[in-house]
Structure formats: structure tokens, C-alpha cells
Amino acid sequence: MRLMTDRPPILLWLRRDLRLSDHPLLHAAARAGRPVIPVALNDEAVAAMGAAPRMRWGMALAAFAPALAELGSRLICRSGPADRALAALARETGASEVWLTALPDPLARAQEQAVQAAGLTVRAFPGFLLAPPEAIATGQGRPFRVFTPFWRALAAHDPGDPLPAPGRLPAPDHWPSSERLEDWRLEQAMQRGGPLVAAHQNPGEARARARLEAFLDHSLDGYAAARDDLAADGGSKLSENLAYGEISPRMVWHAARAAQERGSPGAETFLRELAWREFSQHALWHNPTLPDSPLDPAWAGFPWDRAEDSPALLAWRQARTGMPLVDAGLRELWVTGRMHNRMRMLTASVLCKTLLIDWRIGLRWFADQLTDWDAAANALNWQWVAGTGPDAAPFFRVFSPDAQAARHDATGAYRRRWLAEGQRHPPATALAFFDAVPSSWGLSPGDPYPPPVIDPSEGRRRALAAFERFRKR
Image (cartoon, rainbow, N blue to C red):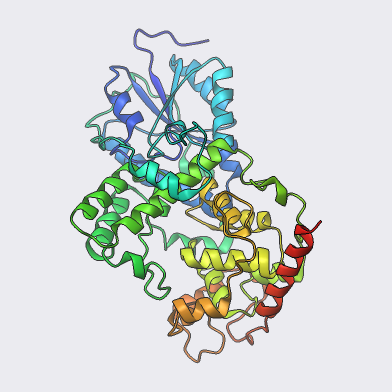
């Protein structure tokens, strides 16, 4: 039976918007004049997450809960399908409305529809994107399929000014019961590699903002060149924080714009990377099957290898392809939960072109391993590398591990950081890989480094031959 109250509370369903500043949903709730109940759900969307992003989301929640407490509020944790869990909470509290930040991925949108079908009013707010997907369109009103005109349209769009954090959130007279976040065991699927990966994370709004300030002060000016220097690792690393809404894209955008106006030579390159994130989100909004199907339907019949038990796929997953730069990138992922952006492109190219393994297998692997996993960015980037998506690299563009090493790791520092085999005194980063991977693999730093699963030149020839046969069908 629904609890009756003169001021029915608002259920704030928090998902990937775990911050206080520039939070349109939180800002509106604080001004609504009604009690506010922040809610996090261990629901079907969490169950669908891979091991690493699920752990990292838990870390984000753990960092956000004390911030809510400082506003006189608290985070209510419940488990179960979203529609049922929220409907039950509404009955307990007298709430009839669920407010949330709109997300572009199809599962989130399906959940919102299910909550509405359960009899609750759903009110969606912006905050995850710089612009609503329908606001950035061609002259004919269609979604952009090419990045450069999308970038020009987004650059001309005014995202509005960032909002201040609320000073207080009105609390209900009686708080509903809450499960304990630690009892969800969101890190469990990481097994023995969890503590290693967790040590490389920077959860929470305070760390996100500090990371942005440090990047602006020390790295932005040289970003255009340093972002591709593997040893320098000159990226902002903000993808982790943006993925969980620990900082808003609008705040990052305005900070980079201000730096651009001050003459920072790296600002436009960084702004274009933010725009690519936006491009991916819009692409997923308009194409919900983006993680599962080639956006270009002509690629539907390409003869990718889909065998989950192939030796080549196992070598790629184990970071033992025999291609040193490729293995270094895959080991960085095992140890840190992240991978340098250039290495994401190289390792993806090797999988779906050099080895001719289905790009969706790689997409699912990254979805399980990446702590900065984002459904849209992961899908668009894999389709870009595979040549099947919007504004994609042509299939005949096959990354050469040797050429990439010569260009972006000329001294070998990045490879030495992550590959223990052959080094008399390997660094801790390289040794950590053997503590992160399943012990059942029996890998040891004393093992000889493996020969290549395929010569990259031969893999390229094979890929191009397969493409020519497919094109002439």
C-alpha cells in the first residue's frame, strides 16, 4: 500500500552521474521543495557489466556516498530489476516520480520505459552529454555519419554554463532501508587481479577535478604530440571519470575552451577527442544495435573467425601474441584496467585484421576488462578499427606493430614497462601482469617470450586477400 504524504518525495535514480557539481538532475531536485531520496540499484544493467567496470562503478558509488552525506542526504542501495525495485521503493516512501539522467545506451533506455510502465512518472535530465542527440544534425535533420562535420556542428553548439553543486538536499522524514554497498561484492568477478587494478583507479569527483586541473596545468599545451607518445602517456585519463559521471563533459569542455582562448596549442586536439566521445554517444542513440551489428550492413557477411577457442584468440587474450608492442598494450590493460588509446587501436587492428577474428569478440573482451568502459565509445571504436562503422578507417588500413613501435615507442620504454620476459631486472609494472592473470594459465616471468602467432606482414596479406574476395562476391 502506498504511503500517503503531503510532500511526496522524489526518487533520484543515480547511474552514471556520480558527482555534485554541474549535475542538472541534482540541481533541480535541490530546488524542487520536496524530499529527495537518492537511489543506486544493483539491477540488470549492473549484471550486464563486465568485471572491471562493475568493480569501478562500485568504487564510484563508495566515493559518492560520503559526498551525499555532506548535503544531509544518503544513498539508498537496492537490488533487483529496476522497475520492480523502484516500484517497491515508491510504495514504501509515497513517491510517484523517478528522476534520472538520460543515458544513450539501449539497455538504459529500455529500463526507463519499464519503470514508466510500472506506473511511475519518469523525468529525464541532461548531463551525460554535451548536447541532446537530436540537437546535432545535418541540414536535412539526419544524424551525422562523418565526424568532421559533426565536430563543426558541436563546436558551434552552446552547451550552457556548468551548474554549482547544491548546498543541501531535502531529506524525507523517514529514510527507507538500504542494503550495504559492500555486500554487493561488485569486485568479486575480478578475482585475484582486482586489488591490482583497483590500485590504479582514481574514483570520485574530487580526484576527477584534480586530474583535470593537473592536465590543464601540465599536459594540455603539449597534448597534440604527447598523446601518441606511449612512454610519456600524455593523455588526460579523464575517460575513467567521465564514464561514471564523476565529472561532467560540460565542465571539461568549458575548461578546454578557456585554455584554447588563452592560446593553448593542444586545446583544439583535446576538444576534438571530447567531440569524438560525443559522436559515439550520438551514434549509439541513433543506432541501438551498434555493439552487435555492423553499422554498414554490407559487412554483415564478412567471414570473420568467430571461434571462441582458437589458439590465436587465446594468445591475444593472454597478451602473448609474440608481437611485443601488442602484448605490452594488452598487459597494461590486465594490470591497470586501462590502455593507452593508440594501443587500443593497434590491439584491435591486430585482432580483427591481422588475425581476422570477429571484432565483436574483442569488443566483449574490452567490455569486461576496461574500467573506463563506455558502451558507446567501445562499440564505435571497434567498428572504426574494423572498418564497419560510421566514418571508419578503411579495412585495408592495417596497423603495423613494427611501424607503430618505431613511431610511438622509439626507445622501447613502453615495452620494457610491461614486458618482463628477457629483462634481467623487470620493473614492478611488468611483473604485476603475472599476478593479475588467472593462475590456471601458469604464466611466469621466466618463460621464454613466444614467437609471433602470425607474421604481421603475412597477416596483412591474408586480411587484404579476404577483403578482395569479399568485395568481389
